[in-house]
Image (cartoon, rainbow, N blue to C red):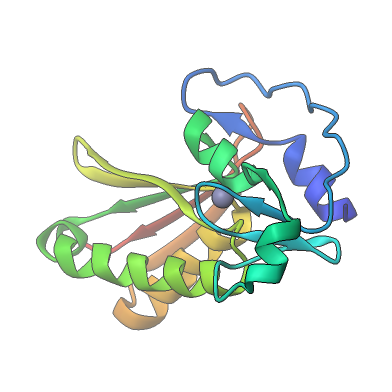
Length: 168
Ligand SMILES: [Zn+2]
């Protein structure tokens, strides 16, 4: 596990409690392991996206649930994106589609990077992501395409990356 991942794990928060959870010691995974929910494959120290699998390989895999699926199930996130402003509200379907495309692309290369939830609360759209990098990428891409204002901060409550994009 890389230093970056350990660091971000100690910063993660959950939707239910704002307290950072105690990092659980995960048992080493069998190579190959396959996620029974999303089909991601763990081999050579990394999770790889779902794709064509040989009968041979599937006969050897250990079935498990990958960290991203566990995280999504518990509502845990490392990144929080807030989308605000009149322009954003008026173009919400288009912006949601754009975010889906960005997260699909991220997930294609890294199955761990995904959107946990996308909900409108009062006048903002809140997107929770499993990775800080994905939250950053969403805001960066929205700014690139639609201009507006982007800002980033780490939450003092749970250490997640708080990324905001706004266009009035
Ligand atoms: Zn999975």
